[in-house]
Structures are given as structure tokens and as C-alpha cells.
Length: 266
Image (cartoon, rainbow, N blue to C red):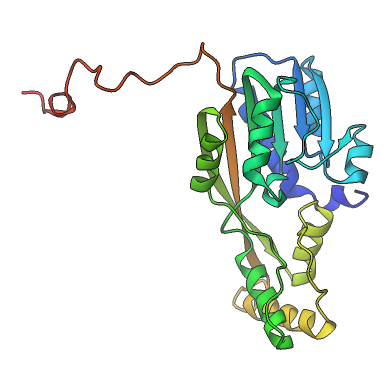
């Protein structure tokens, strides 16, 4: 937590994006749950709008610093209908049971409550993954699980719908960040709250040296001696079902056929 200010740019970017999207929602909220407490600005922004806010984080230090609750996202200790807004920032990519976490979030919302989330998705860190693969292969003992599985936009949207959210929307964006070496990239992940949670054998010095060399070789092609790393971000929005929400028309109730509607006008 002490070094988050220097390395938490990605979590801050996701938080800013979520707050900007929330500003476009016309409905007002009163009771919010913030999942991911490393960046306190989300909770502060919601309180500034007059909301009662509960912060929760899987990490003890982050939860304590926010004055919140330590809990895993797939083990939320809240009663059904406790909140009308849940904001999840930069944490869902490391959840053990993401489908279960989404179901619990939907249950914790009152009818017509809003769930909005952002996290690192599939396609992220291709060069770091290659460097870690190179490091593990150099040891001759196989590949260790150093980066947890990642979810793409389409799969995330499907999970949102399967969890029972109404009007689900999933979209994404790509950020490119330039690094001078492997150590700088690892520092941003570790101290920015984005480190892996998988348990695997620590990489020996020889393997880390191999990974560093791979990263440095890739940077040689750049005039500035740096390498561009990619972060693919996924954003989700869904509503707890409510009878007042718009629904698709009943199948077969259309008064005009699609063929007729698409027929060129004379």
C-alpha cells in the first residue's frame, strides 16, 4: 500500500473510467459497495455525492486503510438487497470463482440496482508472459502458473448475463505502456495491486536473468530502448432485475416483417 501512489496508475485509470461512466447514469444512488479499496478515490467520490459507502478488499492492508471489510469477492458477507450500487475496480481478474462472485454481487443489489466493474482482461501483458515463459523454460523444469487466467470482453459479458443481470453490457479498451526493463513492469504490477495470486515456485535468479534478457532483447528494436506492454481492460455494466425495466418485445409480436422493413424505398 505504501508504494501504490507510485505504481497504481492502471487501477487509477480504471477507477476514473468507472466514475466517468457512472456520471452518465441518470439514476441517483444512496447505498454503495466498493469492491477493491486500494484506490480510495472511488469511495470518496461516492460519499461526495451523498452516498453511504462500504469498502471491501481481499487484502488486509487495503481494507484496513479504507476502514472497510476484508473479504473475497466470491465470498461477500452481505445480505441480499443491501446496496443499490456496486462498483468493482481492478480486482475481478484475480477472483477464484468469477461466476460466483457476479451472482453474489447481483444478490447484494436491491431490484434495479447497478453493478459496474473494470478489470484487466485477456490479451494483456503479452511481452511479460513471453519473458516469464522464457525464464521458466531456461530452468528446464516446465512452466509455472505465474499469471492467472484472463477473460475477454465477450466471455465477461456472457458471465454477466448468466449471473442474472438485466441489460448487461461489456466493452473494453487497450492501453499501451512503455517500459525500460522487466523490473519496472513487475514493480507496477506488484505495487500497483495487480500482482498474481497464484501459488507457484519462486523463480530462481537464473530464470529471472533469462526473462530480463528476453525483455531487453525485445526493447532493442525501439529507438529509445524501451518496450511497449499492452493492457486490455474490460468494463461491465449490469442491473439487478426489476419489473420496471424495459424488456424485449414478445417473439412473433412484430407488425412488420424484417424483409419488408429492409426493403429499399422506391
